[in-house]
Length: 278
Image 1 (cartoon, one colour):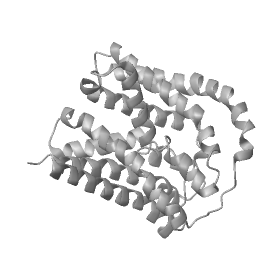
Image 2 (cartoon, helix red, strand yellow; image 1 turned 120 degrees about the horizontal axis):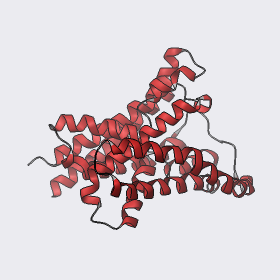
Image 3 (cartoon, rainbow, N blue to C red; image 1 turned 90 degrees about the vertical axis):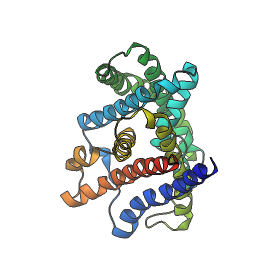
């Protein structure tokens, strides 16, 4: 048990350092631009969102044997936490915005509608699985929930919370740090990257035994699954045509996050497999 914990802790540190360094090196050393996805049309964005929701459904389907022993409320909280942590929106994104702008409160206020939407998504996912008996049904229900999230829930939450958020907009600050970032930003960036890495290890814990195949096959599958949950596997194909960059620069801009989260999923799986060796 002690050896296993040492391997997992070492793996946690290595995963944080190596995975985030892919993005940091590409952004600050190579000079790859941060992707501006504001001009992406609805269809590619909706397809990417659906694949993220579908990947979350696949995770729950695989983890259901362990999760179903808990109450619906606890299952919802677990799914919500894992989803928002992989997406880095539970704490990290808001905290890092505070680091860059010194506006510590407003980013968390601004995130409330998104987090509420994800909480409702997690609840809907858990409840809907009572009606899923075949794998193909995951497709239909995940499409339905994604469309409800996109066209009903998110607009309603935004209409409710936007006036409240606007009333606190005086708390927002302009950035005081700009690229290339120094240690004031990089240190908290590495520390807070613990959020998605912890979530990845928990995901591996829940689904490792339910995956078929050899260890290396499981490692690749989990890497792909976590990258899909994050929503970073397909933007390199779906979003790059719409970026206002040349073809190579656009691919590099999107792929930095694809590589980052493939690394998160693959490295956590490698160290999990290592920790299980006798």
